Length: 213
Image (cartoon, rainbow, N blue to C red; front, side):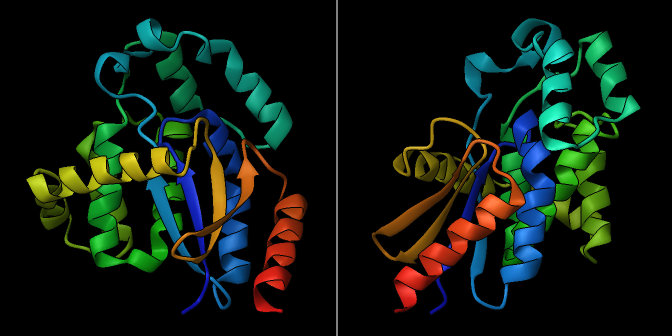
């Protein structure tokens, strides 16, 4: 069994959007040596959900910092939505979407996380907008109607909440985070918060040496 790199993110996390190109590069480079999985953290659930203006007005200025540190660009579509302030931030639907996606392509979860964050942070689509999930489904050769139908099934909602619980078990208190899982109870944290590609690769190589020698 290959060791696994587990990426814990939230679709609404700006720093995860900044980290997305990094973890995608790692996926492209290391998929021969590692399996990959993505867990949703559930950053905005229950009483923490609501319009940007109410639950996350800080985004209006915070995105500049993310751009400066990570080099990503937030799109005009997203910035327009931030200015309007009425986009509903809710982590549940993207998490359910990820679980549905993994029922088709469990090995490509990193690509789903990357694409959904682009839809939100570049194109300015709300996380509850089913158009996002249809678009991603089509891009991966999945029937969009079937994909959206599955998102309304209880099984996938429960799977999403199970992932939120797993992220807590891994003691993730902020996003992004990444681990190497070498065995059932053997985890190595390789990213806590935004991490540059060269640093992440160095940590992966160090863990690889440790678990294979």
